[in-house]
Amino acid sequence: MPTCTETAPLNRWWLSHRSVALLAGLFAVFPFVLPYTALANEIMLFALAAVAFDLCLGYSGVMMFCQASFFGTAVYATALTLLHLTSNLFAAILVGVLAASLLALAVGFMATQRSGSYSVLLTLAFAEMIYFVAFQWSGLTGGDNGLTGIKRPDLEIPGLFSISLQSSLSYYFFSFVLFIAAFYTIRRITLSPFGKVLMAVRENEQRAQAIGYDTRRYKMAVFVIGGFFMGLAGSLYCMYICFAHIHFVHFEISGNIVMMVLTGGMGTLFGPVIGAFIIVLASDLASALWDRWMLLMGAMFVFFVLFARGGLWALLEKLLRARAGRGNGI
Image (cartoon, rainbow, N blue to C red; front, side, top):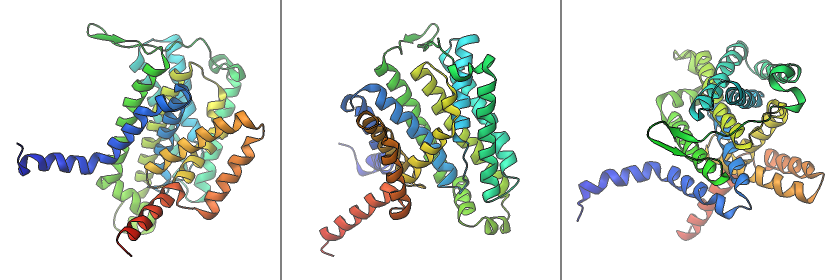
């Protein structure tokens, strides 16, 4: 029978990781409870992009409107790698993530030269520039027709094993492993000393500068980290749909990611996951029922901005606190 000293490390591990374990359990059953596996895959990949953006906005106070640029650049880089360079799965993901990270570094370097609305408008200008380049450079990107003929590679390590990812379910669980690993990494970043400095920058940048932190470097770093994980989401999304199109660098993608974060609750990590689930699922259901379904999405977004600024996660916490208070007889 295990002693208290033997079970203590296990208990500490569970207390510090139970939220991630519960999240993994929920996503593990999604393909079997949602109408189709592709919907579960889309929710998960946009949840990853939303969590990466929440690291920038919710934890650092860095607002941007170029999320689609990082996401879409990874889509194109992954597609071009698979079409012209190699069919290796990890090489394609690596190229997509590196392309998004380098773009994030360039955008972050320029955007952090200014602050406030000027910085935000610079990111919007970069987003429009990337969209224009993708649209005009049709020889590389396919323009409005996009890139087709992309084949999803299998997961294989020569001489060791090979796993087919051609079915939606098998690819979902491959993406699921990377999603949980990425979510865990982002969560560890927020709990680290680096993450605490980011929160200090969010709360009062001048005070953070006064105690010796180079806040511009920290904001550039969070641009790159956010771009890295948005790029990972874009790369996985490319191989999920086997298609690359200028829609993925369009402002609509950026707007959807912002909506997911604000609807779920920024500065929480778990909130954007809920927001991605609500937005993607509601879009799928509403678009099948009504042609003007975007009106419903807009009305829902306005409601959360005006009346529930903490998002669904904050509402959930209030309900749990109220229930706990009633249980204690308060």
